[in-house]
Amino acid sequence: MKFAICNEVFQGWTWDAACQFAAQSGYDGIELAPFTLTPDIRTLSAEDRVDVRASAAKYGIEIMGLHWLLVSPPGLSLTTADPAVRRETASYLRSLVELCSDLGGRVMTLGSPKQRRVEEGETVETTRERFLEGVRPALDGAYELGIVICLEPLPPPESNFLFTLAEARSLIESLNHPAAKTNFDIKSACWENRPLPELFLEFAPHIAHFHANDTNLRGPGFGDTDYRPILKGLHQAGYEGYISVEPFDYSPDPQTVAVKSLEYLKSCI
Image 1 (cartoon, rainbow, N blue to C red):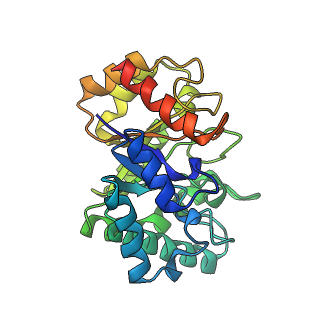
Image 2: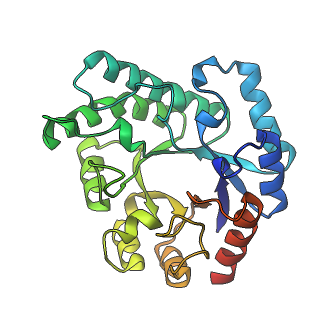
């Protein structure tokens, strides 16, 4: 199994320093949140992108993909009633595909709950159609570049659309696109109130990425979730993607989170 860590864990660190520490801690990859580089990735020149990729390569670590895709620039939405905003968001998502390819990534995780909401007065059905329409151009570009886009289930109150893996599968089936996948996030999957290994095995054919955290929003091993049966389920399903550490509470500090999370995960194999 390959392990990555999400770079926003290293708040206030330079990109180079985050890559260096992740590599020294034993990670194989790093998962990049684009907003940590710049508010608008379209401002990153070809030379900037080469430098970002080179920083990771210098330490023998892979930029395995992108997440937190639509946090910035402000005002993006795949599901708003405003067609101009939807077009701009779809275009930006397509630009993110190009960035992912330029950096050598192969997986993009589309969470961004505030940018895919059921707006007041709108229906879930309308939201669903707008969401599907918005992601299709990016999926076409992703397929051409060997990238998959994971439609990420997120529970309430964080999200009010696309809560479960079953809903993600339904969207994937409607898209009928080889680049459309989903990811398995522990804190989100726990909300479904089913045994996690069973849940993973059921949806494994559609899962292309894995976020490791806990329901207390800390890293794996910092809460009550037992990863041993979960990782056994991944092995049984033949999962070959990354296990990426994605906490939301970085206490006591990024260094401890990074080192102890990886130690715990490896101890569970």
